[in-house]
Image (cartoon, rainbow, N blue to C red; front, side):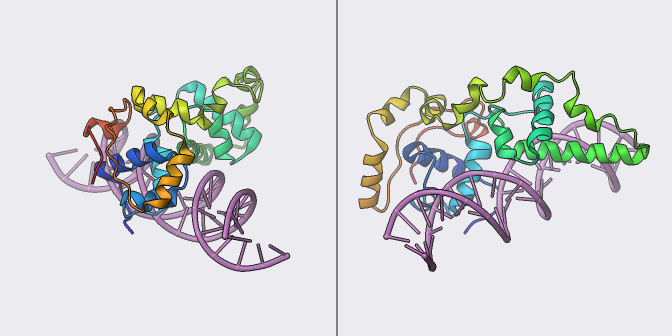
Length: 204
DNA sequence: AATTTAGACAACCGCAGGAGA
DNA sequence: CTCTCCTGCGGTTGTCTAAAT
């Protein structure tokens, strides 16, 4: 099994097969795609990097604020926190928190004076993100679990190809044929680095 | 200009829980 | 009921790059 950084070619292939089979059965996708990766690795790559709904770049102050608040409330429940931050992954948030906390720890060391009003800032009265969220609502909350919107974002008009083709049917077909040739021409996905280099089909 | 350091991001690992056989 | 496989989560480590010295 291959490890380490993914190549554009691998990304292309993965995007293609996830487009075909959906975001599930990663082990199967890993096998069928011919990628010499574990299903786990494929899933991670998709979730953290290739997912079309992902935001890239640094966190906005609002997002940072929200992370602070949610972490104060839920602790290290990164995936849960991520649900509240559309386009951000648990990994990203986790990384952000890590560097954030490291910075804080260092600052605290320097000062070594335990007044530490900053640590309590996460629950200060000036924070209103959560209250404005009203806990569950936040309209984006469920977007993640809505494959159709994801696919639309990812594949634009071509999503139509998928629509008239129920997943169950696909599964059935896959089960009967071990190998699948993926040659649906997907249009480039904006904001996804993969597409800066490649285009066209993803056959092997 | 070269080197060091810090921050950001990507990826792997181990574990736990759920589903199906 | 239990065993196995798959998936998802959280922790951790590695890599790259920009800023600082």
